[in-house]
Amino acid sequence: MKLPSNWKQKSLEALENKSWGDSSDKDTNLVKRCIALSKLPLDSFTAGDLRVMIGQKFGLFYLIPLAIEKLKEDLFVEGDFYEGDLLENVLKVEAKFWNENEASWRVMNALIETRRDKLVQNKISSVNFDNAIFAK
Image (tube, rainbow, N blue to C red; front, side, top):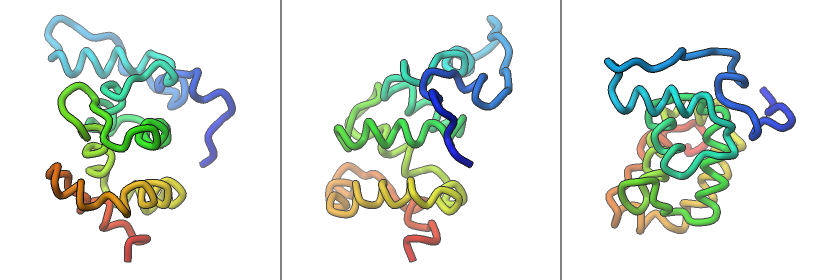
């Protein structure tokens, strides 16, 4: 699947043609945040927003390329909690996603291949990422 033109100016709801509805008082803060983020244009996402949504496996086809852009600027960018938390969530994405998105896998692999020592130092696992068929 190819990314549509002006995709960064659209929300996940618009891109995926799916609504998660509105949050209620009974929802957790995480649920409220995810619902709110699903309605925002992707170009307004911060590293922390990407970390949350990728961690919850929302909109990976759209959000991983955005995360890669941020990681190209600073591989260990902090997304709310600690240095490298966005990278950690990206690398935790299941191998199935990477197997279906070889171009993204190759870009990520190029970003981390010479920095694997720092991944270990920061206790960031790349097991799911390394289980992609391209890693073999």
